[in-house]
Length: 325
Ligand code: F6P
Image 1 (cartoon, rainbow, N blue to C red):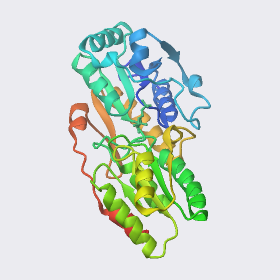
Image 2 (image 1 turned 120 degrees about the horizontal axis):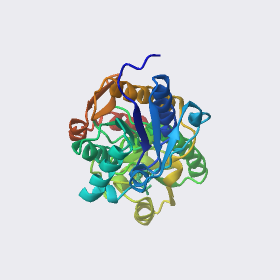
Image 3 (image 1 turned 135 degrees about the vertical axis):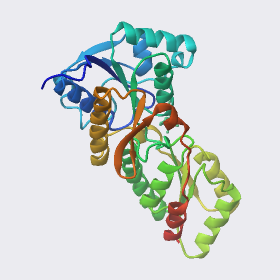
């Protein structure tokens, strides 16, 4: 294929908390670039690796056998240096020194902010939303979310067995930072009686009242999913037990939600978004974030993307609770 796009070399990195599907993004970026005769530098440990010069040459074979793997072959980190003007200036200089025509950054909110800082310093960047939190409101999907929901659902299904055998109340804490989507999907798929989300301010007393009501309706066990940004499972379980006398156990799913093989949905979105990112670069559309909106892949300016408002639709919340009546 004749290279008419004028792009010679790009960099790719994964940054922030890892998410299942990051490897599929790397594979798609590298292979789309290779198919279009573009050289690829793999930057290890996100911005940390960029700042310390931990960079590898990549080709189509470097990304063999990774589409099915969790984690990220390029490793990842949360860089505090990249939050400082000095760190950002240094990172931009390194991108120039490396001769990168553009840099692809796969990560969440903080990683996208890092890319925006670089773009303001003249580095061409394209971002791919990748976080289990689904908290980049500019996109209807962020890579890793579906896999994390499936992993948590499996765990919750197991907790449900023991909870019902003992007629207990189980409080399950899931990740999501300040976003409740992961918790909401876990509650819906796990058939939880209640779910506590940062977007809705349910009080502890209200949760307890609902548990008592559930028991009065004949339910012999309760499953309450809690978003980490709302309550802590251990404290809430103690309060429920103290106030109701119902044996209550907390479970914190923690980092298992970030691991494991990516789901089919994550592999598809990651492959498509990785391809879209390189396509944007070849079209010289820089400083963009690839998004999935209203059923189609598209893009926005990073700055606009980061400004998008988190509009929480509570319909699914009410349905999930009604279905657990
Ligand atoms: O952003 C992904 C996430 O897993 C959040 O859900 C969680 O709050 C956070 O990362 C944990 O971060 P760390 O890996 O730095 O402990």
